[in-house]
Image 1 (cartoon, one colour):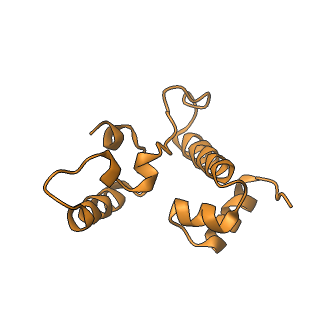
Image 2: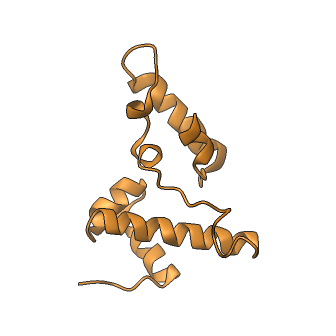
Length: 109
């Protein structure tokens, strides 16, 4: 339950609905435990808005900063493999490249 409450849910209700449906279909047995959660929830790939230095700013600034930090953290976890990062983030690779340019994240090798 904590994982669900701590996650930002960038896809809002649609993402939550998809996650719950996926759990209902793919979980073996009657109990959903932490290992049953989608990878993005299990790996705590959320940004705490409370501790974010931009939390005092506008909502759009907070969202952009959270997105940037999530992408950077994911790229670090997959050792810079952009195809893998896109898979973990659940977005097409072309969208990841677009976001990298949009957020000013430099290309590395």
